Image (cartoon, one colour):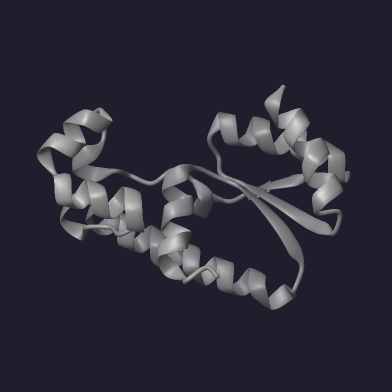
Amino acid sequence: SQARLLGAELVKSYPKIQAIYSGQALRQKQTASEISKHFNLDFQEQNFLNEIDYGLWEGLTTHEIEDRWPIDYRAWTQYAKFNPNIFGKELSNQKTSLKEWLLSLSQTKDEVLLVTSQGVIKMILSMWKIE
């Protein structure tokens, strides 16, 4: 499977990973399970890594979103910017909790791997300037 191949590559490139965290969606857990075998680690489920609630965009196709909200769609896809009028308060709460959790992880100085979704990755990128 792709996850098994990814795990083999990750262990070669990042052999010092000490913890693997996964969202609670089945596909995330399956991916984390395959990857964790290569590191001889158990992965830990973390609700902060669950897929975001897309609010007004939930259930719509990319084309429908782009047609209805072209500026917000472009801001989301190009700059990981979130419009609170579209995504709602729950996203803001998730973002705050995720940031606090990530900051606590950074205090450990451990190398970790996160198995999550595109929405959460965009949320993380919107928090910090990645250089």
